[in-house]
Image (tube, rainbow, N blue to C red):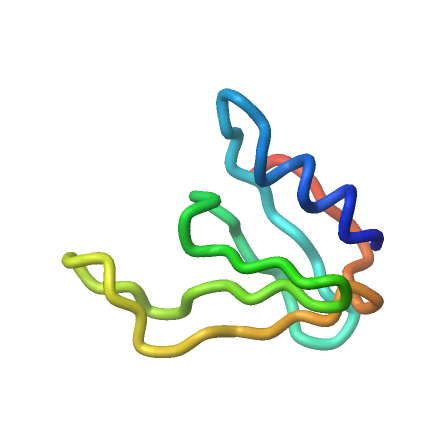
Length: 72
C-alpha cells in the first residue's frame, strides 16, 4: 500500500473511520486521524487508549504488509 493512499484517508474531510488488514498481524481500526502517525514505509497506531486519550503503546504496521483497506 502506498503512503499517499493512507494519507488521503487520514486527511479526508469529514474523516471516515476505516479498517486495514495486515498480511502478518491482523485487522486494525483507525477511528481518528489524531493518533495515527504515517511515514513513507510505516503506519503507527495507538494501542489500548484510556479515557484520557493516553495510549499504553503503539502498533507499527509496515505499509508493504497492508493487504486491504475498507470501512470500519
